[in-house]
Length: 196
Image 1 (cartoon, rainbow, N blue to C red):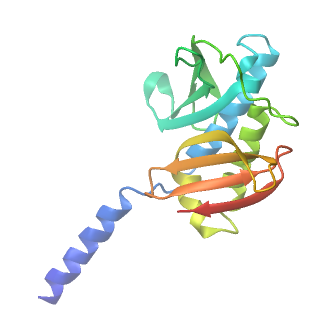
Image 2 (image 1 turned 90 degrees about the horizontal axis):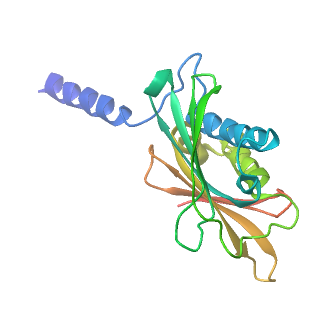
């Protein structure tokens, strides 16, 4: 009976571990790939290969594992929605070290009244939010599932009780059911985080 109980416990532990993402040698985490995706978007704008609205209007990123064309990760970047509900979208295929192998643009309309971040643009704020995920888990163990299993990050404006504009990030992970919320000031200064 004890052997049967032990066997069931081992099977359960293996089964639960199948959903967690362990770090793999010589492979960056999916959150790092997502952050490098922001850098690639900025570089493509600088090179005038993609629309500059990706800098001011970047609203969300989504990442997933991929084996397409030798890639390890596929990162999607979405701008704010246009009046017809469509987005400018970039799809980046990245290798295990985060090098972009290719990119593809899906056209969409820009919003009539885009969000105007006063100090840093949306892509710079997105990078700051991702830096908290990449570095914050070392001091906050509740952030680690978002570091290893980041699925998406969404940037939206929010106002505090005094009416000050804040950058709110909603981060999802496929390692946990909870959501990570990160609040930054418009200059990228950290305000708070919460996992719920």
